[in-house]
Image 1 (cartoon, rainbow, N blue to C red):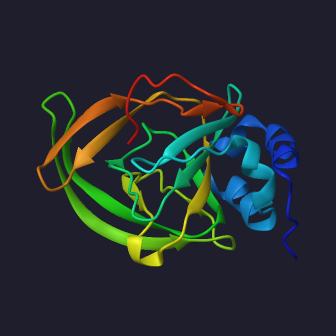
Image 2: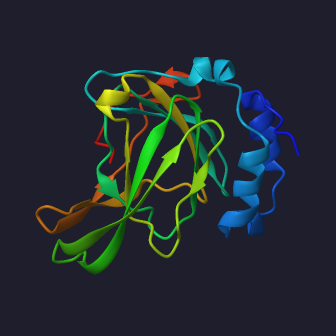
Length: 196
């Protein structure tokens, strides 16, 4: 079946038609993403860029999911983080990104300690969306400097959430942080915290 490119508003309307069960397992939404890439030019009203840190730009939010565009300058990297037992799907309408996954060998959030081991690495581009493994959800996203190109990724989270756990594999530490948006529905949001 040939992929049908959707404008972002068509993409949102299609997502809103999925029942709750579709957001509880990775398969159905991942298949939708494989068959319905987003037209990158239609994302422009929602994008913002920052030389210091990638940006998080809210496009849509319902009780079942939130849809966010992330803008990555060359060399920008997220912290290693999880998604608090929620499903996450990612597509890259512009450029390409590397997703580095980790296995959690030990974790004590209250004590702020963890032990992680590197796992598989996957590359995302227009034709290769991915879903975070709910059993091993710890990962980071990288826009390698040597690729020398901007990238935009669109993330679907299975229920809106505003915290996550961030990890330092090098120091064996972890902790909960508050998340924020740089823009919401195309308008700037006053900064209040950090992103993973």
